[in-house]
Structures are given as structure tokens and as C-alpha cells.
Length: 253
Image (cartoon, rainbow, N blue to C red; front, top):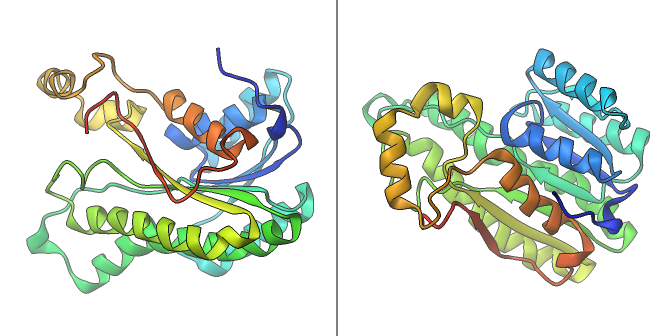
């Protein structure tokens, strides 16, 4: 059972990368709280399936827009359209990312820049777009997504780990800048979350053994576990929590 947060009912929420994985769990969790939910993604088919499944449950269908977050003009437009349709955005979940593996020897300046665009840059510009609405409303909650990967010294994806380290710096600085307006900014750091992509690509029997050895809690962590943390950070129950790093990893760090 997931807790019910009365403060989330009718609150407008914007989620990036909401069609699958952790993002889909967040979209569904907010919809089930009675929030007004908008989300963006590049996977139209997964987004349509998610919307249909939530509608079939008897919930209000979330507002989906196709958006490549590397296109900041398109992101700004999607945020503006969501606010016009659902009301000023009170909760921003900067969820979208792509942890594509790559060798440091092969990284070009163009690839490096694209990884920053995919994993870091859009988080700042989404904050920039929603902050005036939150200020006018007297406050809001922004949840950025980091990664456990650089905390555990993961190799094989230096552009990704650098971008995700930058998310924590972004959170700290923006929490200070936006705090006087009642806007809270936090980072969620997921551990190894069992999305279908992770299971398909990397969850070998040996990897699972190693993971259970590393975690204090001997269970795999799933998208719904992360969504529960995001709901709490979005709600008024966490009203005095900002500029913090919230780790959901089964006790791996």
C-alpha cells in the first residue's frame, strides 16, 4: 500500500521521461493520488500504453506530449502547454536520463555535449521554466534525479557519471536561490533499480549475487520504491526538506 497525501490532490505535476521505467511509476503514482499529471517522453507507444492503463483503472488520463529534452525550446513549450491545460506547475520531477555505456577513449566533444544535454542540461532549463509559476503560487517542489553510479566509482560511462554528479551541484545551488520563494529542491539518488531495461541488459545471475552482497537489504529495488520517495518529497509532508540527497538503494551506499 502507498500512503495517500491529501496535499497532492489536484496539484499539477510535470514529469520528464515518464513513459517507462521509474518515470512511468512516478506518473502512475501521482495520478493515483488525484494529482493533475503531465509528462513528456520520446517513446510515444509506451506513453500511450501507460495513459490507457491508467484510464482503464478509472483515473484521469495524464497529459502526454512528445518531447526530445535536448531541444530546450520544445521543453519550454511542453511546460507552457501543460500549465495552460492543467494549471500552474507545483511539482517538477526531473526524471529523464540515459545511462548509455561508453569507453572514455571513444568520447568526442560532440558525444560529450550530447550526454550533458540528455542527462543534465534539461534539468536546469525545466527548473527555470517552472520556477516563476511556483514563486507566484508561494512555493513548490522540484525533484531532480541523480545516480548512485558515480558514488560507487562506476566506470564505463564517464560522460554520464559526470552529468549525474553535476545534478547534485545543481540541486544545492538552486535550493539556495529558490528557497526564499518557498520552492524546495531535492535530489533522489536511485540505486540499481529493476526497470525492464536494466533487467534485459545487465541483470545477470552473477550481477544479482554481487548486488545482494552490496546491499544491506537483501531485496531488489523496483521503480515503485523510488516513486514512493518522490511522492513524499512532492507533498507538504516534506515541507521543510530541501537541498538534500535522498538515496533509495537498499542500503548499498
